[in-house]
Length: 271
Ligand SMILES: C[S@@+](CC[C@H](N)C(=O)[O-])C[C@H]1O[C@@H](n2cnc3c(N)ncnc32)[C@H](O)[C@@H]1O
Image (cartoon, rainbow, N blue to C red; front, side, top):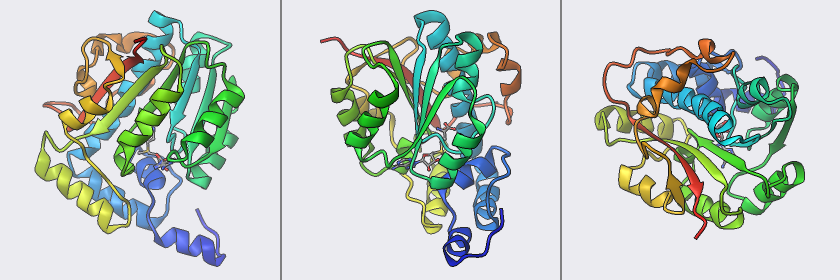
């Protein structure tokens, strides 16, 4: 990326979570400051946890379509596109699938809008803490009376009051709404994860690893599908070989032990 107006220069000097994330996943749209943080994180055990969380989300989307006939997805905090994205996996299975991508990062949304044009794909630049705006964006393009999945993957750990955000969305959306969820934890490899969080915070990126109990409490409005809240690579790994894109989601990192992340698929309880 290059540009010279003062706002852009300022932006180039200040790392941000969307660009650090794309740098970590092998994308191209980041500045030197983002790359420096990504390089540090790549040597930390947070890197395989982030990569496996994304692979879980892709697997979860395929699972919800194949086993529960979902056709509507909202990615909350979508970041920069990395194929296969949610709409790639969904559109590959169901031509009428609809996906809404939301992020507060203007450039991530611009990239999403430019690159993710296939199938019924929508984008919105919104801060997730403005839950009214999030709900308005969802109801503007999706029929929430039909089964819909929210994907909150790798994003809640960037938000201070994520439990409040999840609670607000949960109470506003109909019973039966699905949640695909991942979150980094310091329960496993705590020294690494606390050090990664410190690196991010020192770079101006707020970061909140949470415990199993924190996350279980955040998900209380949801009935979690078997195997529950678990490390992402342990969530039904046998589902890997379904779909045209799944060959493209081989692990970036060999997973030899447990990961510092949890993942779950839940459905908003009916009672
Ligand atoms: C680590 S990326 C995760 C990308 C993708 N969900 C995935 O699983 O690979 C987190 C994204 O959340 C976005 N984000 C963080 N806080 C946000 C907020 N308050 N509102 C909207 N987006 C936010 C960031 O801009 C970033 O693009």
